[in-house]
Amino acid sequence: MTRIVTVSNQKGGVGKTTTTVNMAAALAQAGFRILVIDLDPQGNASTALGIAHQAGTPSIYEVLLEDLPLADAIQPCPDIARLECCPATVDLAGAEVELVAVTEREYRLRSAIDAFLASCTAAGDPVDFVLIDCPPSLGLLTINGLSAAGEVLLPIQCEYYALEGLSQLLHTIQMVAEHLNPTLAVSAILLTMYDGRTRLAAQVAEEVRTHFGGQVLDTIIPRNVRISEAPSYGQTVLTYEPSSAGALTYRQAAAQFAQLLPPGFPQT
Image (cartoon, rainbow, N blue to C red; front, side, top):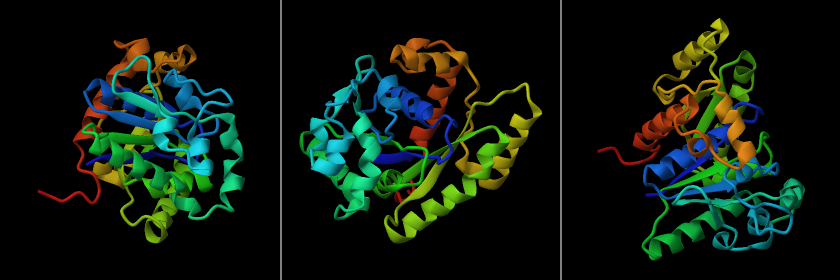
């Protein structure tokens, strides 16, 4: 069973893309086959994975708007085996407007992923995880990401403002589940950018755990300069500085996430 996970938070700067690429890298290093779909017009996930995404590169834009098969836009990550990425180019910036007039506009990504996964399974090399990096907004691109996924991984920055937009995001997830994708649910919440020197960070972490309980992963991602530096070298922190605190905590978070029973999965 392929787990299709949307990494989403409409607030920018909470570690969403950083979480997507580093969780993907950690899962791939653990032996899983991973596909990252960069659904953010900024293309930061593509950059961090060392994936070419200049204008003219086959990308998620052509998949959504021109019916390009997903397999034709996927590139392998140069540093990590079994990790692939469908990049985002600058063309994606106009996709929100162009999708409005497209038939089945909320399900374009879902159809492309389903077709790709079916071909992988038929070839005997199934994908274990699809991680979708959504833009920091609640437009049609994010709706496509939520409609395609079975679960949401929600990164939350350990600062006060990060909590303010949380109710809006959870409401959006609930609306998508009610009207477009009944299997969608929040499977895990990851606390990011934790600064142990501040009382506020501890308070935010405690409040999130109080409200969401077991959905919050035990591992907390600290503020770490190596995590911030890695994308400028076209790498994740796991290849840039494997022994850093950032790499260690993302490995721990990925291991815990991999062991979670996905929402809707039959209980044993």
